[in-house]
Image 1: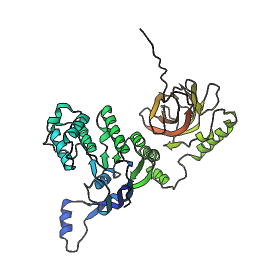
Image 2 (image 1 turned 30 degrees about the vertical axis):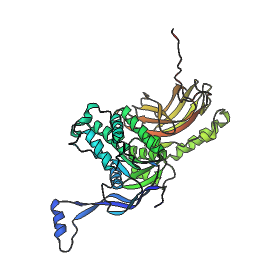
Image 3 (image 1 turned 180 degrees about the vertical axis):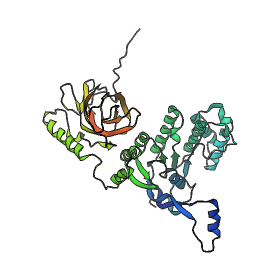
Image 4 (image 1 turned 60 degrees about the vertical axis):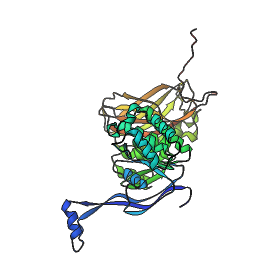
Length: 428
């Protein structure tokens, strides 16, 4: 294995034998002709993966895709049925809340035991104090772990796992537990591990977390890796799988069997509108064009969508402090009477800068035109617009991710992304 590779999986599969009745297991073991009474269930199928040193790998997938099984095999908790796994470095894993903690021992005793197990004998008292401060569970540190809440176990477990100086750290959804301050501490610790050249593998259902903290990502579906790419691309397809009723269609798209998920009619309309208005656009640049990512578009079609300035000119380069409006023209195929419109502004990492939702009160109209008016308080950045339509029961009818990309012109001496129009007042 190359020295730059931390973990290498070659043709890894995990198969479980499923029996209809418990007695079938005994009958199969004793049958003179080795008759088969079980069915094979593949928890993982032919996994091939290389994780580089210093890489933060995000693993996403719908429930039952095989994420936890894959992590357990990498951690050595499970043995694969076939294939080979090669590890280069010391590994520590948090596969579930409080994993590796002895319930009868106190938190303090667990800290010292784990440090010794990991071969750490120097500066034990100093490191122990750092873990106690990170976990921040107060006097409970001297109580048995079996009395801890799930959040307290997560705090202590994460603090121990990340303080033992692992070369490879595995985290399975533990960052979803705890308050926002604890989550931020965890992310800060992961960022430090990344800067120190450590390898981090973690499963998360949060697309935003994967985009923000991972350098690479994989998408698991039906116990196989169907996509390995940038976190943004992987999470885009993951969200499509989560929301789409036709998952096979999304899988075919990932595998390259479909050219586009966008309706051909919608593509032609978008291109026609851009061509029609191009001659009058003063602040529109071609490199800012983007192809929308459509989810569930069987009942609604967006005929037109673009940003307008106060002179009703189409723009995608905005100025801080000016007023703009998003124009949207919708064709309502099934005449949905109760419809809400949601709009959000995100940056390239997936972070949300603004979101709102309004009831359109459209009655039974088939064609809908409306404006979303706003003041641009954003600064120095490129942003994506995401829209969706839902019914009164919050059921998703249509979602269009990255339907528009716009850039806010840079202002000198301003390093932030949002202008709060603040001022400092001297009162005395």
